[in-house]
Image 1 (cartoon, rainbow, N blue to C red):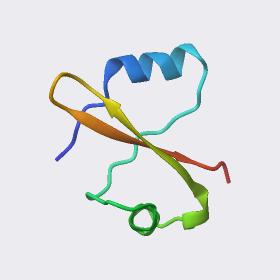
Image 2: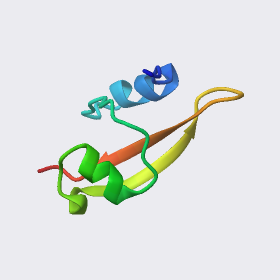
Image 3: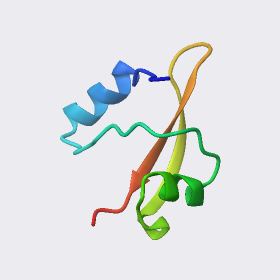
Length: 67
């Protein structure tokens, strides 16, 4: 299921010139699972942050070290 990224998050990234990319992937619970799902080295997955999207929904933002 595709989730929409909250507009405030996208607005913040764009306003501050933050280069970003939205990647869809299966549900994961660990950085190791996320790295495997995205077919990337787990050393590049540096931080995951839970963000509140609205009153009932949350999202997970993962920061990846630039290659």
